[in-house]
Image 1 (cartoon, rainbow, N blue to C red):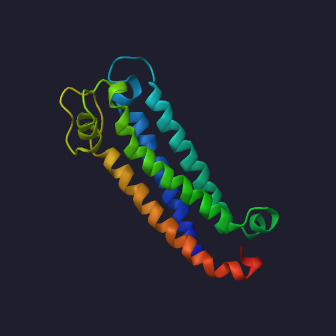
Image 2: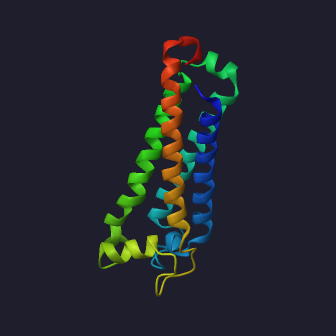
Image 3: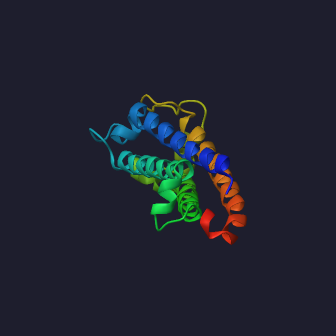
Length: 166
């Protein structure tokens, strides 16, 4: 298994966590359901869950790639950890795009309006304080994480012939 690629995968998962943390701290619309609730709206907790899982996946991938003793002690092999973390990342991408379907829960009339709020580089008219391009950056980071995770998984394919390396 290419340890550098696996480490990079783990680091990108931690970057995903940090971006989510910034979004949680700065997006007043996410925190309050666009001012309809105080404090902390349901979608905020969903984003918190994404971030926590990013953190756990990143630390696990880094642990397995950096500590040979952990690999020997665990019933999970590094390949299985990479597969699980990659599956999580792909699910997070789907959730990041699929959230548009919840447009009516946050007070938008159409999915297009909510998509404009989420994926625009300029602030949505009438929205509370937030960093407009941060959601875009998080989605791009998830895509990069998935690509590196895929490479890490492919590089682990050759390792399956040698059980001591899994």
